[in-house]
Image (cartoon, rainbow, N blue to C red):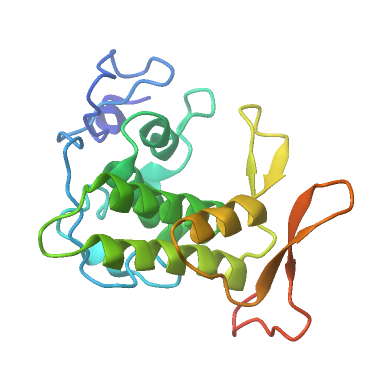
Length: 205
């Protein structure tokens, strides 16, 4: 990695090893302790681009830097997800979602919103209920636009469907996923299926 590329990394508290070492991240500002003050109720919900106008978003000017880094397959957004989570993870995944619209990015954006709501990491200008509504809307967007979304294990080869955790996360927050139902098979396993009468919104696939 070049010196200029290294200097573009942001400061992540607790990961202060020299730039260039695997899974090490240098940032230009401290991303811990952020409190979420949404600029729009659709921020972080595809296809909204509102997160790019959020002055508190430390990644808004560098969408490309959030793609997987050449450090053994660990990207900035994943380091944030597995460490500080919450608001920094939201900004990382929501920004990535604007440049790489995938169900995986939408799922983790919604998951971060739920964490923000439950931990109280939001500003006085908003409320827990509003952030929860945003999280549920994010999960709904995943079903509407990326119903076959998957995420991967550490190898990057084994895929896991996101429908069930997205559905159960939304319900746990007190929300409802429109157009989908939770079903239990005779062997006790559960899955999420699309309701027969449900029609995907324009852009869904």
